[in-house]
Length: 249
Image (tube, rainbow, N blue to C red; front, side, top):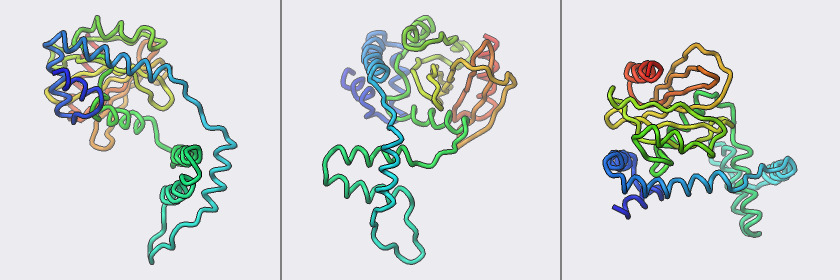
């Protein structure tokens, strides 16, 4: 079991196996504690390691270099995309050392097309979390364990509720980042379907909104100075039931 926990932390399990392991954590306090320790270490590293934004001068220099890149002549009817130009230039720059390669890699993030709205960012966050090893930083079915875990890791205290009696058990939580917001993510399950409840402080329209993106349903609402986003591949009715029960609990 120890090797399986390590594989889950290292992102080597698929979503189905990770869900089975989450169920095991609910019944095995020793394994859950081991997973929590490793996940907390991972979260602390992500929180404390400095993050530096690339300066405007670097972007300008990369844009000039990419503009001057020479790529192979395209075949008839084919026009290379921006990413192909970046990759071609990266291969050239890599020959000059690691620093140039890193700069070229930074261009992928700096120059990537933007324009996504908040709903799309929230759904994308949920999809990323479904990758092996990313769903939870703390694994517990006890709301009195999950809620204190966020203390010292987030500058706000998210409300945590247990809906196991209604068929939506709490299984853990994690820290996430959505559109520049540090978010608390509570993880629930409905059968084998994970539900993310993302929470962060915000003054938002209190009226609920809902929709679907990329096959995932979402519902957004605001209360008590926080905004809430529930996202899942559950059908819209079951997700609405979850939100109704959560708000009423």
